[in-house]
Image: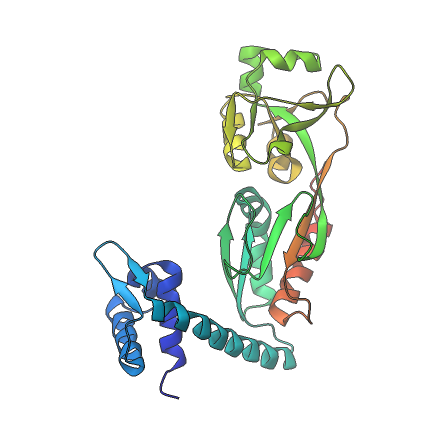
Amino acid sequence: MKTTLDELQAFIAVVDTGSITAAGERLDQTVSGVSRTLGRLEEKLQTTLLRRTTRRIELTEEGSAFLLHARVIVESVELAEEQMSARRQKPAGRLRVDAATPFMLHVVIPLVGGFRERYPEVELEFNSNEGITDLIERRTDVAIRIGRLKDSTLHARPLGSSRTRVLASPAYLEKHGKPRRVDDLAQHTLLGFNQPETLNDWPLRDRTGDQLHVHPAIWSSSGETLRQLALEGQGIVCLSDFMTQVDRKEGRLVQLFARETLDVRQPINAVYYRNTVLSARIASFLDYMAESLGDRPFQD
């Protein structure tokens, strides 16, 4: 075998990151080192894998075909290493985790220190996406999803649930007044999601008895953006407890319509594709998350 694992990893890193510079940062190598490695690989294969321009890097047809084989080889080596680590009962290797920005910031990140202390040989890679992530396309091991699951091809590990509440900052209420009835919300600035539309169903009843659906004046795809807007006094918002628990405790956000609020909870699941025995690194993360979140209920 002429091709080395380092050359395959460098090739994949360049494709995934979109540049030699970014690939060097991921691999902790110099730009010139990555470039030389790619040159050796193309020389051994006697073909051009990548077209380099001043603006971007593109795969050739041969490069696209070779990339599929390269990924299989590298993933097979990673799996072999995981199996050897599992035999020693020491989870190891890179673990790729995806979660929406608010959950990543308010829940996952505070748990990283404890996880790393317990499993120091697991390398963590975090990615944040506000929408649904294709686990295979993004090479994601575990994705944490808030809300009902629709993809039946996924295996899910329930981690808990989080209640939603209608909130506003003291500054907003002082300036605009506190709504006394649900109907009063129509006279206020409402903050909401541009996708999915179901997130604009608030845990209140409208005058017909149905769950209240609002039309926001300010929209965002990110719950964290809406939280920041609410903290700045820009409007009334409905968010999950996992991102507002500290704000409510410290008085930065105040719950509205406490008596009228329905007990609406968003399920929290860790999802993954593999239906065989989980690798030690994935199992260790799932177990740690379930254990930690069980000790830290989001609601008051």
